[in-house]
Image 1 (tube, rainbow, N blue to C red):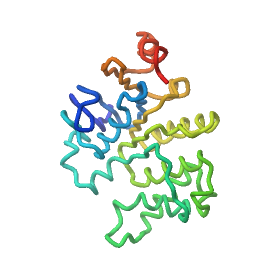
Image 2: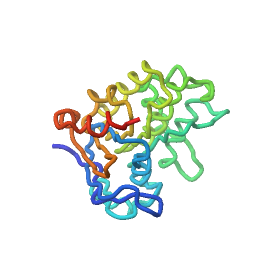
Image 3: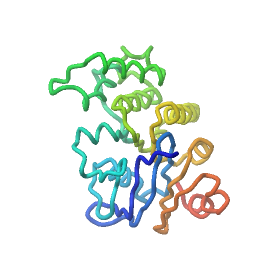
Length: 243
């Protein structure tokens, strides 16, 4: 039986004025959902609205069946984590120190690290393959390594929903493939729902469970990659204007 992690109903998003309306969709544990659409469609705005960084203009967002507005900030951070596309400028933090910041929803007001926190961080670093880089400075890493560290920090929150805004943007092709395979592993092993925006159609098509498409005509479509191929929705919305 599928476990519903996220449900959005008749959601309208935007900054004071609506940029996309009437979005309804669901996300389940242990699955990857790719959010796609032309530039300017509102993908980042939708992700930030779900992550409670931007208020919804209309509609409902439910996490585990509970209105997301009823969560405290700490409890919300234990359910949802997000990695944005902007590059993080950190000069004097080591990899392990940055990942430990993901434990902040669980530490006391002094931020004291306990054995449980160490166990979580060590497990995440091992899963993502960062143990050998633990003492390296974040600023010295490659773009691919930095993205892994940011995902590790988000996973240290032990979220039910991991939101990624264009996670492959700054990566070369081999690093993109490696990251997509890693995300597939994470969703399966951790039973976490992953919602990520992307333009890399050919790379993600065989690795995601469903696609959300914000159409250039204002339509919202969801379904499996096979559904999009068989119905011609890819041709309609991607190959005639997707950049």
